[in-house]
Length: 471
Image (cartoon, rainbow, N blue to C red; front, top):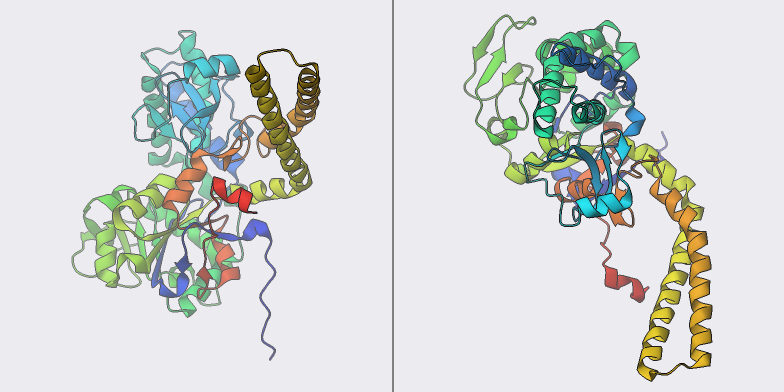
């Protein structure tokens, strides 16, 4: 039987390393479920969350019937400014490059004035980060409700912070009450975006000796039914999704799961009518409720560097895990696929834009030198003046050509907010968070199938600003 050659991989399905990760040294892999092992049709899921939350807010007597959900109006990585009622995008250094108040973008001169002395710092209570797909429904509610608050149509709300918390309560109630997930289970084909390659990916990891864990905030009844629907048709005959995982932990309450010593219960029956406090090691094949990450480490007898956790939530799955436990981390972001495709389609224009920017740098440098020389001479030199006029005119013509190309580059992926990982010429705040807390990142779990469980994922050599002249 011939030995298969490595499968060709589209750049959109790549696995990208911020820090080198030797998968051979990973002994256990923990997975989040929603938007990680399972991906959803965003318009349907977030649209349903929006409608359920809107119904909760209508119960407060608010005029919200005309509010509509538009997923395309937002992107991940934006920040709620709960002090000013704005939605903003910033660079990795926290400088605001785009901002919106209510349903309208702030003009550049207004934005510059408002944020001239402000650096977006996610450690401050003033700023709330959009770091998961669940935030799209929140952003849609926020922008429209800010307009209503500004016109005094929302009773019981005194500040934008109050409004943010009211939206948070409504969204949480939508999930806790179970109506949203009941709607999904009633029509899973409408909500789920299945990935038939994922079961084989997990089977390969098990064949390589990895222990697999499912650690989700979802409750047991939803986890059991939705995983069976999405996974069981692709499992080998006589097996189910339960056979893929050594340990299943539901209602984990992440990020507290990684930060606190929460009590652990063992689920005794399938309908969750009986749970028993559990002490001692976690046992394969059982379902547990709650608990904490330290129990997982003790049960598996592994050190932090031998555990990899995979999730879609930058804070609840990746940031806390890396910051407190030093587990290895992987971020799942399906938006990468369209981002990479958009960048590929724009590659020729990007090359021309880079070349024109080099020309602009040279012209600006020449213009500055001529101005300094004019100041040094202190008298008007016709030849110098003519050269300065020529260079200034050339720079103006180049700016006219650059403007539409730069605008097109800034609108890749989203005409309002632009690319997920970039903010103008800089990395975005989202990219900085990924870089800092995710050892590796990719668009879907099944991309690991192309790398195999034995891969050595190497981080690229970082470029510094002073490297460019060397090349």
